[in-house]
Length: 165
Figure 1 (cartoon, one colour):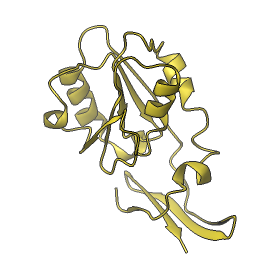
Figure 2 (figure 1 turned 60 degrees about the vertical axis):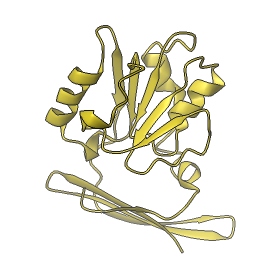
Figure 3 (figure 1 turned 120 degrees about the vertical axis):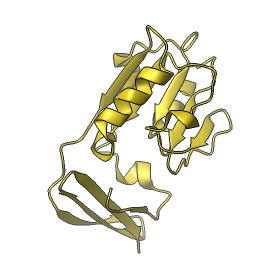
């Protein structure tokens, strides 16, 4: 990734149009709140993990991100690159791994190798992704706050900057 900076705690609100319905990946992955251990990979603000809690998760969701921003103590947050198998806890093993809107930032060969190591037989991996964005410059106004978003794709890298001004 050639740039990433998010200087606002309003990320989920501002990105609603792209991050709609975090529960849809739980549905697609046949999430069972009674038995599944959920790994919310590249989980950021924890939208998927928080949705799992709303659904009555009996096993604590695990969120892994370069910059986890989920303040809920019922979500275990791990800081690190999801492509590095060494950052994963030895247990519990994930039964469902969800990657929401992040594939453009990852090396698919590294990700596949890591998932093969950390996921037990029968575990599920579900993901969605955006199209590689064209260069764009957008301003937002939320209440009395203003934001600038710059996004684009260069080579094989996606860049995004969201700045609170």
